[in-house]
Image (cartoon, rainbow, N blue to C red; front, side, top):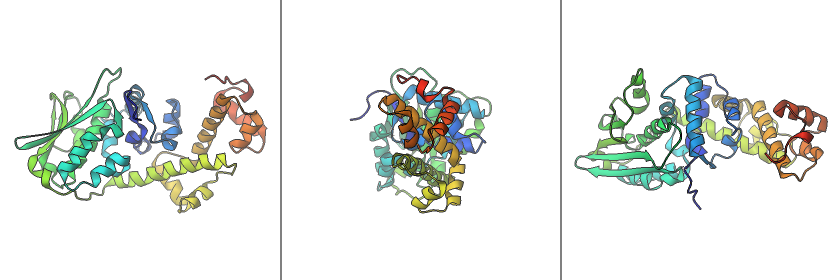
Length: 323
């Protein structure tokens, strides 16, 4: 059953991690501060409340001092990285079919947003908007969404025929948006949308390779590694970097490089995974502290107690179980 509350799937903004990494910011620390680390890598298909997603985007802008960070994140996003929504588009026979699928399947990524595909005269439009009330500024998500939607007609290889309309007014430094949204940008418009020449609709989709492909591969490795950490912890096996990399069919150096590209240190990810699992197990109220220590990979309960004090400032036996 689809979530009917305004919410956004984590997968649709996972590229925040490599974007932060390019600016020297640890994604683990960033998302830990916002209370969703390491879940962003271990549960990419979970929906988060839309207000929290807007908050994340705005915190990202504050951390990087980049007022158009959302556009850069969207620019780094490949359609194939967006689950079934992206895959259905890439299987389309032409741009018209791809645009129809992008509009009708938007609920696979966003609950509480609409995409309308409209053809009129010599133009075609992909109109994007959020529905209902929202407590925080959604502009960063709009930038990112338009950067992604622009990639659909862009697969024709005709960037000059594509225009981007933004409701936001012109501001200082907004010429940097051209890097992500192309040179044909109009601001202060009635709708946020992608507009392009109708002649593109019958054209087949071409393959485009850019930096976003590297981002996709790095994030896929980060998600797989994060999932294997949980798996190995639950099987009471030591989650070593070399063992995880071997299971993924790559060298430890390659995995380390891909994680670094996403702003992740393996030991930090392991530590945060242990912390998250410990808190989850304590909240269940069914396990002894010794059992929890073994479950998350500590052979000595004293080591677990020291780690838990570092994580929370309290001993595990004194930590509230009703949080």
